[in-house]
Structure formats: C-alpha cells, structure tokens
Amino acid sequence: MAIRFAFLVLEEHPYGRDMLKALFDEGFVPEVVIQEVSAIGDEERQKFFDRMAGCEIAPRINELVTGKKIPIYNVPNHNGNGCYELLQQFQPELIVLGGTRIIKERVLTIPPKGTLNAHPGMLPWLRGSASVGWALYKNLPVGATVHYIDPGIDTGDIIYREQIKVVRGDTYESLNGKVSKLSAELMVRAVRDISNDLVNRIPQDPNEGETFRVIPEDLLAIGKQALADGSYGHFNE
Image (tube, rainbow, N blue to C red; front, side):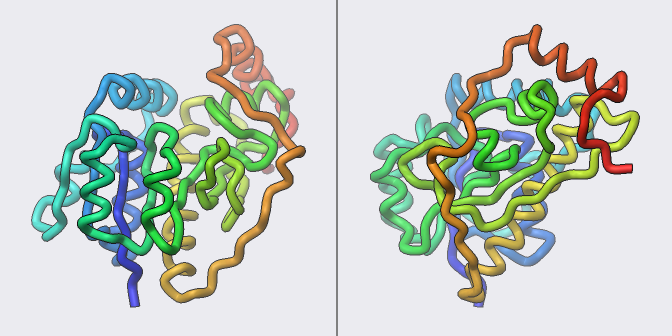
C-alpha cells in the first residue's frame, strides 16, 4: 500500500521537478504539493538553474500535476503558519522535500514516519551547500544521499547513498544534472521502502565530515579545472 505523503518544494525548483516526475513515473502520488513562493525560493531556483545549465530538466511542477487530482498550494514560507496548517489538515504519514529552505522542528513533528531529503552530495562528508563544487575542489566523490531530516543540517539517518559515474568530458553542469537525476531515483527507492516497511536507517557520525556554505568562485574554478584537465581523482573509466 502506497504511503500518504506531502511534497514540499520551492516554486518550480528544477531539483524538485526531477524528483516529482520520478515519483509520478513510479506511481507515487503525493496527497498535496506545497510550493514556497518567496525571494529565497527565487534565489535558490536560479542557483540550481545555473548549476544545471544545458541539462534536461523535468517539466514545470504545474505541468506535472495537470490532469491529476492533486491539490497544490502556494505559501510564503514552508515554516510559516499557512504550511503548518495545511499539513495539519492533510496529516501526511511522510513529508518529501524537493528542494526547500531548512525546515523547522514544528513541521518535522507532524508526519509520524518522518521527513525525507535528497541531498546532492555524499553524506556525511559533504554537508550543506554546493556539494558538487566542494567535491571537485576537495577531490571527493560526487553523488547523492537520501536521508531523514533531523534538527541539524544534513545530519539525519541515511537511507541511500550512491556515487555517480564521472567520465572524461563531464562538466560541472553535467555533474549537477546527473546528481539531480540520481537524487530523484534514490528518493523513489526510499519512498518505496518506507511504503513496504523495509527501510534501513544508517546513523551518521556527527564528528565525521564537514558542513559547507556556497563555494567561492575561485575555489570552484580550481575544482572545474581539475575536472577539465583530468586531475580529479574519481573518474569512472
């Protein structure tokens, strides 16, 4: 039996669009979609569009839900009263995040089966922002992790973690596109496992890894150069 879940996403976020399409393709349909329409949402959406420039992105969320009996609501802040009241109304068993701001604890207490996030990096080594850029600069594997959300930043129990295949000719943008697709695939697997009560939780060591902010342009340039000249250490060939 499919689990009842709510899908939270910043307005038309490309990461969330890939994820929602993958969920639909596998028959997982949210009871409600709640989009945050805000300046933060605009900024984060543009960051991901820039990082994924030239990559194929799923249709817009409003197009994806066309013809499906899924209520879709816009709120100014996922941590605000409007979103909280909607979640209280729908009482989802699970919340799936498709690219959001940091979600506060009062929202996290609503779904009895927890809140899931797909992080575009390999946890616990790359927490926080711009994980693909930091992976290239730090010479670490590029990948994605689906994990439960707890009050920390990317510190909740891991469900799935997987590297992408990095090949000669890949660019920073193509890697971000691959990570978005992998994140969607891993989220589908996690939702399926939870629906079947088969989920496996792997606790993170809070003392392992680092938490990063957006990578400075000069450091990102170094990582891009390592990818371009072949000195990046995690090609899969």
